[in-house]
Image 1 (cartoon, helix red, strand yellow):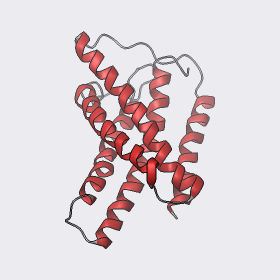
Image 2 (tube, helix red, strand yellow):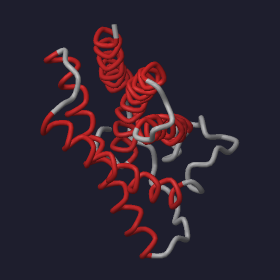
Image 3 (cartoon, one colour):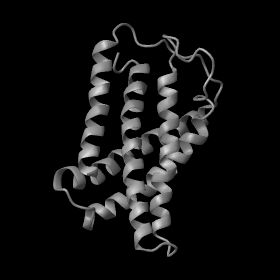
Image 4 (cartoon, one colour):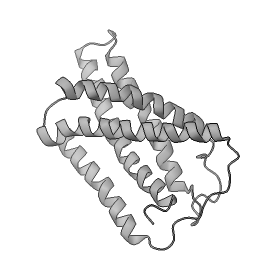
Length: 185
């Protein structure tokens, strides 16, 4: 069942991006005003974004490959790559959330056209941040000897569905970020 739901969910996220790309014409949102952050903070935030994006691509590729293409559970080398990428993703996402949370807080007028950090991008940022919590904790908790086999299955299902939502929000966040920087306008 998860195979069908994940295929539909990922296809819907990509199709939604394509429809939005075709429907929303005109100039990309304007450049944002200086935010007053120092060069070191901006550099750390950029490295965090790049690390999180690269590790998320590895995690999505290894995780969804087995489900969508092979219809099997992760095992072997792909599992080792997936688990290694998970640690990098968790650390990089923590850096990004700490350094970028202030820029992504919701304010009046976020829905207005022409704002670089508009409400859609902020929503996707916070969706990724919130959905990463059950995605990470479900697998960390499953590594402890606290739960029986039934609870282990629930934790795995929690991981699967939260990462599906996380991936869908990540696709939109990547698109809206590229659009706000003029890459997809």
